[in-house]
Image (cartoon, one colour):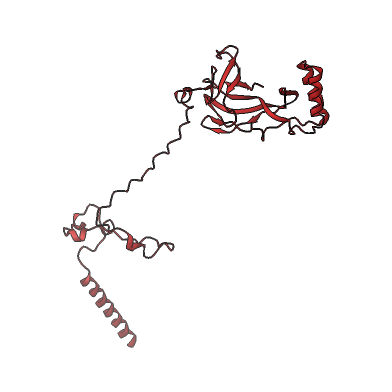
Length: 293
């Protein structure tokens, strides 16, 4: 009997539970059927239709730069103002290249007295000298010219050149001179010709130096060289035996070319001018001045 009552209670309880579930189920909660308009929800509220993903504009801070100066932000311009135009970089004008100095103007130095050697490619002028040219005065096709000094001082004078010059060289010939009561005679056997030496100058102007008696080089003669030179001089000039013997007797004790009555004198001086013509071809010209004895 007890078992039967328990079964009846279970059946009643199950019926009550099923009835409660059917009453709470909303309408239209069945399976979704394709094409059934009753299952389509039409929403008219724009706030509900808003696309939260596309309208989201997150502000992502830039990665922190540890090397950046924390106070740099204070120096940044306000983004609300229009940016100033970028400054134009100042460009320094290109340096002006120094123009090659033209050769000394011909009009400035060709006027007035002086030696003037006018070659085809170059003109050589030594103001202040009175000279006489030997040979053909037209030097267009010549490579050299010879002059005899009539007046003026060569040492201390200047050489002025018109043309493109690369080098000026000088050499000279010195000679030992004997002064006697019957005359002054150069001892040709005691002459010395120096090697070429470069002459310094600027703007095609070169100063002549080293031709004074104290500066000139002389033949390094011994006593026997002096005696021999004196004897040859008297023979070449065909002096009388008496005159020749007297001169030899007066010079027999000389041991140096700087002993009186001997002294050193300039016999001639030469200059060599190297340069380039208008076509860039090298040239070399020489002039010589002889000093009369």
